[in-house]
Image (cartoon, rainbow, N blue to C red; front, top):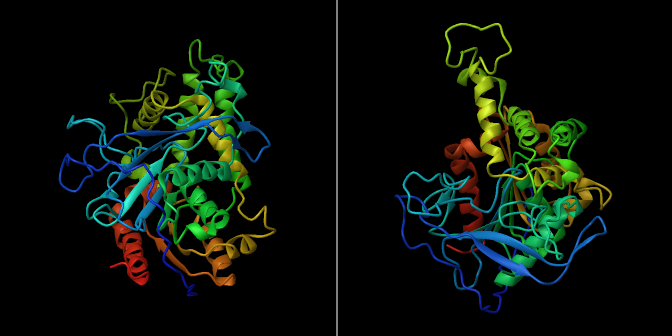
Amino acid sequence: MYQVQTTSPTPAPAPRWEPSVTRRPARPGTVGRVQRQLAHFASPLRLRGGQTLPAFTLAYETYGTLNADRSNVILICHALSGDAHAAGTHTDDPGEKPGWWDAAVGPGKLFDTDRYFVLCSNVIGGCQGSTGPSSLAPDGRPYGARFPLVTVADMVEAQRHLLDRLGIARLFAVAGGSMGAMQALQWAVAHPQRVETVLFLAGTHRSTAQQIAFNETGRQAIYADPHWKGGDYYDGPRPESGLALARMMAHITYMSETSMEQKFGRRLQDRTALSHRLNGPEFAVESYLAYQGEKFVRRFDANSYLIITKAIDYFDIGADYGSLRAAVERARAAFQVVTFSSDWLYPAWQGQELVQACQEAGRSVEYQHIAAPFGHDSFLVEVEQMTDVVGSCLDRRWRALGRG
């Protein structure tokens, strides 16, 4: 394994902003009640596609306490359907569902908030507080179809504005799974002096034809919904049927055949025999997928789904530099690459290509292949194994940098 020397970051000047600190733990081991925060930027965001957002907003949440020299920051980057709400709850309601990675973020957890200051923001183009197609344009109407296409590089550039606003000069680590892994890699390559550790989980350095095909099938489901109206549907019914179908198809790729067979098999839903009629879900797996679609449309915007899946399709970190190796040669971070045995959406060989490129470029890299039955979603589900593997890596890096 290759090693690379790193240096501690130069402390940034103290900004006016100060992080909000969790006050009331909701239950042991959690970050408790948290608050979504909004950062508004009046300066334009120039996008890779040539267009410009005249102003933009990023929604974000923070967990833990920023240390004196601001050297304990971990940026978590979310996947396609995620948002800034990674952990904790927004109210004191004990029945409220916590953030999407709550099992991994908190005191003593994988991302230990007793040690690290964890930050997560909703990507540009999203629909959970950050500027996206459903946001109001300067003319006071939703952007809709006028919202420009964005790339993973644009998402990272918007995050860079946020870190500058918060006075965070360097990241101890940037972590993410799936599309979050793409952002983590983009950070290391585009801003090598600002990233010390990359946690690349269940991701790819470039989208393949098959991965693009999966996303395009979902987009076509949205386009075919009569309520989509070319993207300008905000004054009427939403294209819920198309978005739900897109989510159902995508959700199949997040699971594995083994996990679906173990969870559902050929079990029937609310009946004892096949009806032999096309009258709705009969099998439990059909009902489950319908539920996933219905739940998704209550919190997500169809145009954001289109924008974000296109950003995933565009991603190819080596394209701007001639090769993957040339791209990672720019990085100064230590990498940990994690793949999962049952992940057929982003299979292990794609992570292994990144590992090989890091080794050829002389970059420090650790690789872990985890046996897990849950498919692509294993990085969200297998938190105990992830804590052993990724948490241990973070601890080693923390100590190697002389911080405890």
